[in-house]
Image (cartoon, rainbow, N blue to C red; front, side, top):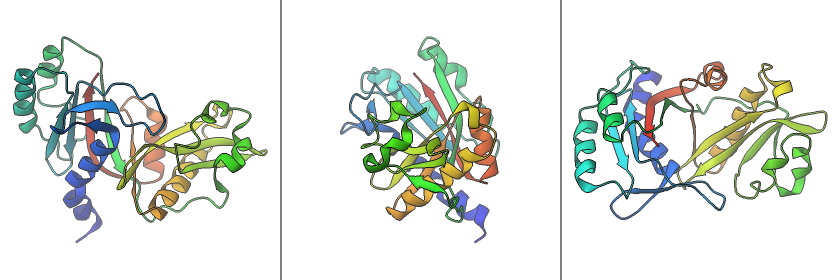
Length: 238
């Protein structure tokens, strides 16, 4: 089986891992909160739809959405498919928005960081022990450093200038959160940080997942530069 066929066959499983990592659930698989590893997570979106390159879909609905509305959402979701037309809006896009009275939505691609992606030699894992590297631009990460692990950084002039860390974590998969200081953007450092993070995640026996929005061109350039494996697209109504 070639690489593209392997990605196709694994696409639905990867989407399940993605949505499992993103949110917390109750016994009915209804969404409750965003699955952030640090304290104080906010509420999950009211509706999540994942479509895969294999033509499958899955949906998740927040616990406080009326059961009658949830049934309708599940029916529409069952009719969704994407295939390789990755940027196409969901078939029932307008129906979803009308049902939630035009609530804000997000949409974008979902990727797996391939195992063969190699990190740069100077990628550093940042922990509490060497958190001084975050001084000079990433001080806001100090409160999260014990939770958002692994946290990989590219260091220049004795400080972190691009950081990729785990912002959603399960026992099977981690989701990437990526930030680069403005003065250091456009130099390929973000890609190196993602590669360093992905290796650390795989060393934990987990899969490194990377998702973004269609509007985030810089993030999509990182995915293209690393030749990440696209497995689907997400759509959420906040």
